[in-house]
Image (tube, rainbow over all chains, first blue to last red):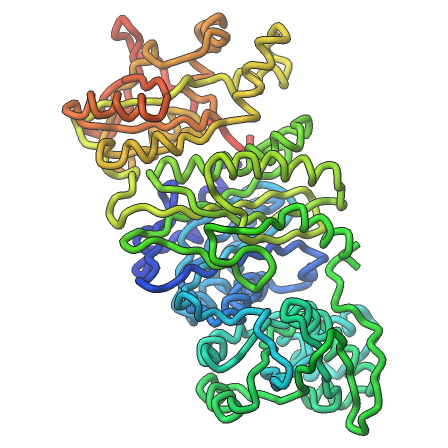
Length: 317
Length: 317
């Protein structure tokens, strides 16, 4: 069976140009430009926890890389390369070919190369590590939010969670609407261009993987601040906007799997923020503000408190 | 259960000093020195394929990092940092604490930091990515072997395979001898210092993970050369030397899991090679030579051909 796996590994072996050395030696060699720091992120995806068995392999290849690129985006890093370690119950060429297609399409779109990795026989497990570079001292971090900063979010929120609720059978959607939200869940677009455009503009940033409330909580704790979040200002798709308000809020506040950027910036930066959104081709929405203290208050358009009863999407639920 | 896993993840969160930013943000930030290239390697370990369920968690933590550091050693790279992604069936604190102890002991011994990672609920799977740096153009690669070069190997070979045969029940060893070879299997020492000392001395190098014949084959194919290997010159422990000759050869030639360095160097470099071995505190053995052509011939002390009927340790056997 080793032979089969070696064959399969060839689906992932392509010549590299940007990297100094790709797959096939003990290590890959990657150039990091002078004055830049290496940014590294690593995610492991397990079936039933991070993706459903119903996902098409091509979309799984896309998503496995997308969630990693999203971490680079949140740091304002320029993607350079990635490695892939893949455990598969059996050497399924059809699966691998489609998975590789999805992964490479996204890699090509971001100009990065797969420089190394590993394959093993075992329960399905996908581990990708991405490498990017960021000017020394210039990374967007979680700890820079200050009282008075605006709170911003890119794109729209909650569609991925809405799709999950359809898969769970708790919500029904017409076919076309389901396809729209399913794409949001299975083909998230990492906001790399936005992250780059926000360098020197945003005071903190995080990507929304576990749900807005949970991820905002990380920023607040690391920054030692509180926030007021305007629930009715949160951006949502037309599909989600047609759902009952409680479901909308669940999906937007605790949905998870959005892979939009949540960031803070001083009010003096509002024009610069909107210009960054334009450069990245993304709608940006101001949805609250940072305050002194440690508390997160969520309020509706009337100023009334919205109860926080979600702690973020739970991968181990 | 997420809470439990978050708790567990804290076993792996330690302050960093060398890295610019460690665990806890979207990305880790790592400094790569001017003029250096980043060397990256990634290995995924699956129970039953790469380790036995009988291994102590502390030794597993050691080995999971060791096999990755061994790849950096084979490139002559200086280790900088690593990431760990870990899938576990359940949040077992005892296992994690011991695993972390083994991993950090080896990381500390090599002055590297764990800068990021991921944990997930799922079948046991360990994926480590290591980062090192090497002067641009100075990495030891597999493609540099030239006809006339000597073939060298560090340490002794075959003990890990001998231990595996004991676990499989095909060989019996007295308790003390078993402990010795079991340590070779479970606590391999990556030859990082040797790899660094061989920069500019060796013409090619690889670490022995899959068995001497298979790994030498990678060097020969990449370099476009053949080799003559002196089977009786191969270094072996006293424990292995007491076994029947056929078993000795199986263990040394096709054993796998040795994590010694196999390298080539011009005969003019013999003194430099031995000096490198002394600096690294390792015995080095000249065990053959590179020839024109593509064939690997294995001969005994009398010059007679030893049949090559092994294709290297098969992780998927």
